[in-house]
Length: 245
View 1 (cartoon, rainbow, N blue to C red):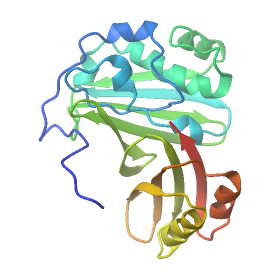
View 2: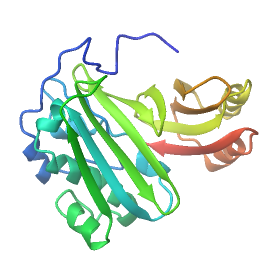
View 3: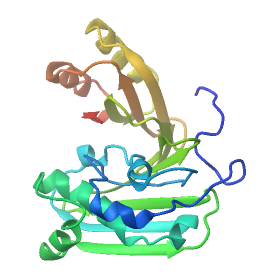
View 4: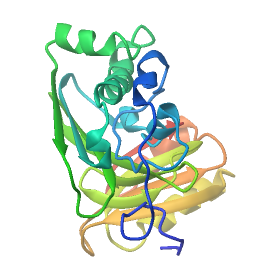
């Protein structure tokens, strides 16, 4: 993995400041095509910039939504969390219900559809000064995603489901999971190269060698469906999806 200067915003290396006015978030369209967040609050960030740390989890959701859990840890737990939860619900429900959803009506729509919404708060987190973690349940799967902001507001995803991963959620992306054996990533790179699709960034997350891995590949142009199907047909692929932020 490439080296960089602590993009994850961990509390040991970087100061963090709370967003000054989170309540302003409730009247703004904060979340477009996003689902789950883990946030390090940095100086000068507006709530909508903070929520840009939510990458693209709605593109990975399958099945009917049953529950959403939003966990706040560290400094962010002292904020007025309701507008943030409403923004999360806006992103998630927007995936299922479309543009009729906004941050104001999202909590009502969740209640109307008997979707269980749980908020949890704790004052400290072992690794992050501020952390927001969201878990989504459907009738087909459970999953989670986490993101962080650092510096002047650069957004990074730092976890996808149970896998730690450091990826930039922007532009066109290929997200896939595979058995962590030699050759899988090389074959995907060959397919993309033969299609004249340039790879702009690549990040991998895994818990152990030779187990299961997740990968986020940033590309410079959209991946056509036939190319995606060719990737999906490779051996040792668990899933592959394209997302645009």
